[in-house]
Image (cartoon, rainbow, N blue to C red; front, side, top):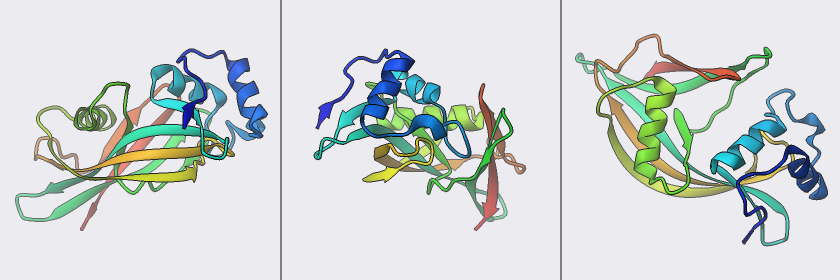
Length: 190
């Protein structure tokens, strides 16, 4: 596969033309569960996403991510698993998604999977201190993300398990605040 856009800086109108030239209708982006064109532009500029041409010449969004199942075991032996409950956008839209793992983080250029996952857990959950992290494998998926309708996404995912300590555990869960949305995480006893 070849890179479709080799530079990380791309003007919004150029990006829109490339997407529409590939038959992708961006008019529904920013509605329902979909993110906006500006979200994709930011992902490209930060190096978290690249656009490539697939084997059939189709436009693909390529993303390398780390995903972690996050656990806590209480002093009494109760085991909890964290999950993302929902995202609430500043414009009032709400979406629920099942990423398969509690925390998912796009890797930055030249970042190793372990460091990306620790950064993701710290940023998304506000966790400080050492995180016990074990890589459990890697997989690859090709799917159309609800974030960008019509744009196929190739995900290369490094999978991890993380165990939090008593100081890091918050019974009521965690909230990640971002400029455009808030993401809520809750614990389930397993």
